[in-house]
Image (cartoon, rainbow, N blue to C red; front, side):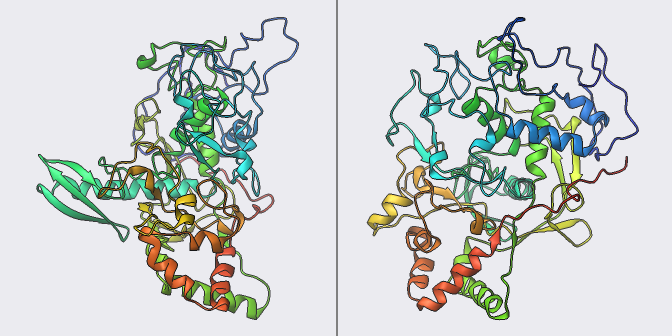
Length: 495
C-alpha cells in the first residue's frame, strides 16, 4: 500500500489518467484492510493485498496496469473471513437484520466466495451456467428464505461483463441526450430519440410522470437483465455486499444513512473495500476485452455468416438488437455522475482512459475524430416479449417472473414482463440462454419471443431451414476471444 498517513499524497510524475475536472482530494484517515475478525493469533491471513486509495489513484501513484491488476485480484479473489467475507448482521440490500445471517445460504446469499465463481465462461469476466444462477430480491428478506419459489425471488442467469466499459459510456451519452431533450419540452406526450432509439414519455407539471422502455428519471440503466443498475460500480458494490458479504466503505463506513458505522455488518472487519478498491474493480471490468465477430474458415462458411447477417436485419431482429451505435467520446471515466446515493459519484475526483488505446484486446474501434463504434446488438431499452397469445413456452421462458424489481407498469402490463434487450455481441460464447439460462439453443430463444418480438419471431419461423441456419451461424460468430499476449496494457503519459 502506498504511504497514506494524515496527509494526501502529492501529484506524481507517472500520472496516466486524463483528469476531466479540477481535482478536489479527500483524505481518508484510516488504515488498510483490517484482520480484526481473525484475531492477532489467527494463523491464516486474508487473501487480499493492501487496499488502494482513490486519491492515490487520482494522484497517479499507480499505473494503469497496477489498477487493472488490483481490479482483477478483487474479481477473482476467494474472500475469507479475514478479508471481511460474510455479513452476519445485515441483509444483501444493506439493512440491519433481526437475526444473524447464515454464513452461506444459496437463496438469500452470501452464496459465493468470488466474482469469478459465477462470471467464468468462457473466462474470468464472462457469463455463467444455470448452476451459478442468483435469486434476485431474496437478498432483502428478513428472516432469510430457503425457498427458490418465484413468489420470493426472480431466478436469473449470470451475464458476462465483457465490453462493459463501452456499454456504460453509451448509456451515459444516451441519458444525457434524453434528459436534455425532455427538459425543454412542454407538458404532454412526447417521443425522445437518442442514438436512433425512441422512447415515449409523458410530462405533467414540468416533470416526467410516465415513460416507456426506461425509468421516469430517463437514466439508461444498462446492467441487470431488468435494466435497473446504472453503472459497473453500482453493480459491483451491490454484488460484493449481496453475494460475498464484502462491504464497500462508500455504501457503509462513510455513509451517513448507515450511521458512518465502520463495521455495519458486525463481522469484526472495517474498511473491507475502500473507495479505491471499488475504483480498481470498476476499471478492471470496464477495460475487459470487447466481444467481436469471428469469421469462420472457408469462403462458403463466411458467405453463410454474411447471408445470416442480412437475414437477421431483413426479418426485423435489428429493430431492437441494434447492430451498431456510435459513441461521441471514446473516453471511459470513473465514477459515473448518475450513480445513486450510496455509490461513489464525486466527479471532482474523476479518472479516465481511452478505450481504444488502453485495456484488454480486442478494443472498440475509433469512429471519427473522438468517437468509437459499439457493435453490441442492443438498444439498451426495456421491451415486453409477452403477448395476447401467451404461448406456453413464452410464459415459461420470457414471461416467467412474478416480482417487478422496480420496473414500472407499461400500458397495463406488469413491470416484471419488461426486460432490457439482450446484448448479442457475445452470444456465440454465452450459452445457455434466457433469463434463467434454461434455454439450450439460440433457435429456441428466438422462437420463444412474443410481444414486441412476435413479428420477428414469426418471420424467422417462416424461413427455410437453410436460412434459419444462416442466421444462427451469424449469431454464433459473435464471440468473446482471448486477449492478445503482452498487449493487454499500455501506460499513457501524463496529460
